[in-house]
Amino acid sequence: FAMWLMYHAIVGVGQRWYQFGWESQLLECGFLAFFFVPVFSLGFDPLPKYTPPAWTAVWGYRWLMFRIMLGAGLIKIRGDKCWVKLTTMCYHYQTQPVPNPFSYFMHHSPLWFHKFETIVNHVVELLAPFLLMIPVQLPRTLGAIVQIVFQATLILSGNLSFLNWLTIIPSIWGFDDVTSACLFGRHTRQRALELASFHHTRDLSVLALFFSSRAASRPSVSVLDVLMVVVRWGKELAGLCLFGYLSVPVVRNLQAKRQIMNTSFTSLRLVNTYGAFGSITKKRYEVVVQGSRLDRPSDDEEDWIDYEFKVKPGDVYRTPPWISPYHYRLDWLMWFAGFGQPERHPWLIHLIARLLVNDAEISTLLRHNPFLNGAPPKWVRAELYHYQYASPDSVAAHNGQWWVRSRLAQYTYIPAVSLHSQWIQQVMRERGWDECSPVWQSVTVPSHHHTHHGHHGSGMGGMGRMIAGDDEDEDEEEESEEMSEELSEEYDDHEHTTAGGRVLLQQ
Image 1 (cartoon, rainbow, N blue to C red):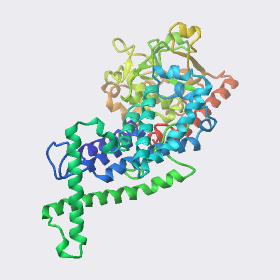
Image 2 (spheres, rainbow, N blue to C red):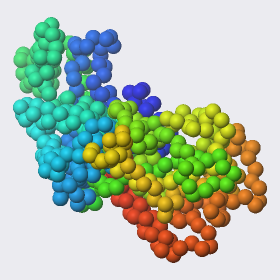
Image 3 (cartoon, rainbow, N blue to C red):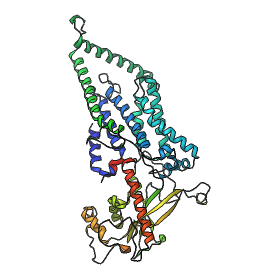
Image 4 (tube, rainbow, N blue to C red):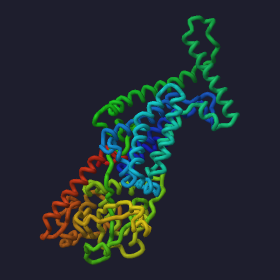
């Protein structure tokens, strides 16, 4: 319980860095585990005599798994049309947050296989969850096996942090003692049978003590036994009432046409709504952060050096990593930044400001800072690139490339800024971020110094559009505005229906 309280505090303090959907799922799993704590057995006996498994927690885990999978299935068929057209997997492996090596080969599977995958996904998420709630063991066992195999498949085909590993935990409670007996030795199985018989007999004796009408037929039960049974069943009933009450808005949400996902209806983050990938991005846009030591930056790509992040696509020759169940939070947020305007991601401005001063602490979040062991960059910018897998039979693939990328030259994501750019200094000071770095506290702004490319004024309102001089071409302006609108629409769709969910994207 203490661990649950501490992680709950971390999630609250961590704000958007800890607002992924699986944070709430981890908190709910942890709280349910509290009901397995042996109240009357303080030792380390794996089978405490006086504290059998709480049926509230057992069914709580089954209910959790049911909500996770059904919520994910419903948000898909209510969301992106590609789930109904069975074309989702034609895009998913390429556009998911952090692909792994196997994702590349899965992406190049034939169309019939992608449609088959989508059908299987609908069956697993929309039908199989009901097996876990049937009060008959054989269907529950089948349902648990289906979910565990499904999660293992997701682990192999992408890097979804610890989400899939965590989801396996409630699936295990679809098994009973008989089903899982083969995993334990003879002594443990015999001990479990004896304890089950002991608790069954004691519970019946206590019930007879209270409800038997004839004194002669009442069994002889000690006061301690009565106390233990009353406390244990009281805890069970309290848990049932709590989870029943908290489940009401969740059930209503599952029935709603405008379903929301990964949302907590209480500050306790218990009995939450879940879901994943209700909206699928059809193109992969990556925000590439670049630096330059030139006195005046140019638009030539050769004058800029990329910062490499730990796991997100960057270097087209770099093999996609295997990182699950580890969670690289910055890289995940960079994925969200790729389909949203920079004004909606002010933390990215903070990142760029710290890179301008070669902040060693921030550099630990990166795979490679090309300026770390020398002079800091004079300019840093963020450009938007379109990434695609290199076709297996292409020249790029034969040259060792995993990706093919092209810069969206007509769309400047964040224009080149220097340490003394007025608007970035204003943002840093208004948000109090300058206090995070001693270098930034000593920076002063010359009155004549502005952002490159004629970006005047303060704030972030001018980012995410074409930044050019007075002779700016009108066609390019329109093209940039269309691109900006497209990113805004994708971002709004994902605000309710992506893996991070609505909670992640709240400002």
